[in-house]
Image 1 (cartoon, protein in one colour):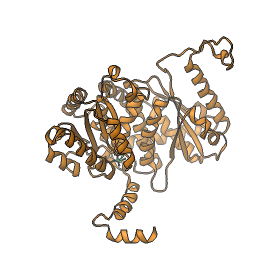
Image 2 (cartoon, rainbow, N blue to C red; image 1 turned 90 degrees about the vertical axis):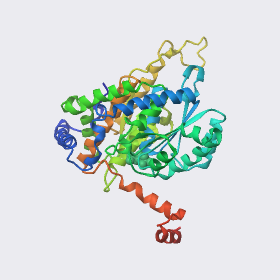
Image 3 (tube, protein in one colour; image 1 turned 135 degrees about the vertical axis):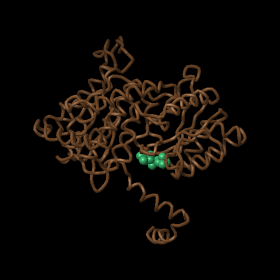
Image 4 (cartoon, rainbow, N blue to C red; image 1 turned 45 degrees about the vertical axis):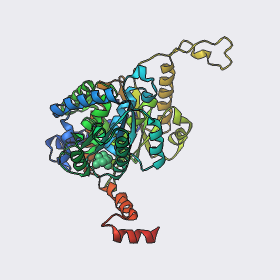
Length: 446
Ligand code: PA5
């Protein structure tokens, strides 16, 4: 099971502080599980690993088989919680090279993500990457009205219809959205697309274990039963275990102690490039859940050792506002033994016979100690291996910890009022109906 080692924060926090905060986490957990706290109409994710729509789950598997059989490419259109979980999973489970593996080996469609920016060059580039390949689209938007995915969908819908004709194109479009409402639902019903549901009580950033994440993940060939099994196991641990054996509670407690000591930035560090998007998913989960009411911990991330040659300087030596959360993949899952070179001109023979992962872990351990010496507390998340079950655990533990942590902080972790401000300005500047007055004011300010 994924576990949390906070021994490298001990220099900065006392056992007494942990004891006091552990009580607060237990209260917050009680509030979460009683479903009486703030945002309690968005707690469907808590039981999702057990309590999911079994009929729809089978349809997800069937649709993924169809996509695998008739498409060389799947374009997944979505933003925020409607895309980061799937991307994190596909990268994590495929060493970051999913699309690059020859199709004779991979045997599943290439998967591209769109609708997470408004870049015309990105869409043109993606169109080029798809080329003549047969493709399908999974458009994902809980609200069904988000501008970025809507624009990308309009673009690729037209491409599909041009390539296959309207009725065949409709069979290649899968819409994941609200059960009843929203423009995407209306469009999907009108055009006859297969639809999947984002449950009412599951917010975007907590939706990776619904069709939002599961359909693209299944298309990549991953075993979603194992992903759900991992989440089920973690749910049991998070719900039932006492503080000392509960990774979600430990994580929530330590980060809140550190915040109260002025550590207002949490830097998630990985030593495996394929975990880059796990950190992106985590940033969205925590940033949107906790950053409100002028409170919160700013979630940032670095890829190490890459960024030790850039951000490493700041972490070691800059403003002491940081703590670090290190993702440690215990079993790299492969072995590269360093070879002996006859002349040793590069001076690396001292590593001959050593596994490259030993070198990576030595860099990690050395960095943890150096950063701790530089007064950056380190929390270590031990991830036994890179498989579906472990990822299911990781997703659930971080989600559970996020709910608990938000309640300790005193915010509603399940809303995102701050996301609306930019949209209002953008719509006004674009001349959308109903925003005339705002538009006038904004134009004066520009
Ligand atoms: O977590 C959230 O609620 C958000 O990040 C949403 O996932 C994101 O804004 C996309 O929204 P939608 O799925 O409605 O297009």
